[in-house]
Structure formats: structure tokens, C-alpha cells
Image 1 (spheres, rainbow, N blue to C red):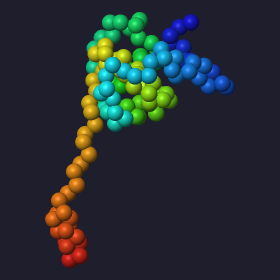
Image 2 (cartoon, one colour):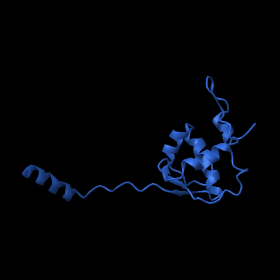
Image 3 (cartoon, rainbow, N blue to C red):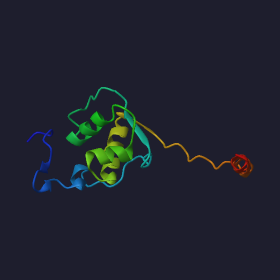
Length: 123
């Protein structure tokens, strides 16, 4: 059977359980993944394409532009844990780049907020 065949039965749903897609692995060699981490394919030639599974190739196809991990998981319809393991495989092979999410913005200074309130009241 070809790796390109989607493992879904229209009536029954997924034929292969998500943990089978990762070979039973639940963690990656990299802790670089956060739900809001941005990932993009590097564009490197896939020299070991026979080594990649159909889900790996599917993910690479979705990452032609930079996207957050949570969005990719939603598009693929797989649990986030499975996506992280598959992305870890791609990262280990140098096929994707991962950027950590931007830190949360800091709160404005109290004096600035008071000035804004004063300005609003003056209107």
C-alpha cells in the first residue's frame, strides 16, 4: 500500500490511531515547540524523501509560508502532541525553521494610562 494513501475511512473515521503516526513517540528531541511557535519549511531539498512518511510530507506542504503550530494542527486535524513529534522529526532533518512566539507586550506605565484617562475626560 502506498504512503500517499490517506488513512481515513469515510464512515469510520481515522483507521490509524494518531500515536501510530509517531511510532508511539510522545516527545521530541527538541523543546522548541510552543503552541504559538511559528514554523516554515526551509525549502531544502528532501534528500531522504523515502525516509519521510506521508504525514511529514503533508506538513511540509502546509508550511510553505510561516504559520503557528496550532493553526497547522487545526488544518491537519491531528492532536497537537502528534504534530509536535512530527515537526520535531522535520526540525532534526533541517527541513523546517522554528521561531519562538514574541513575548507578551508589557503593560504601559501607570502615568501614561492616567494621561489617557485625563485626555478622554477632557473631551
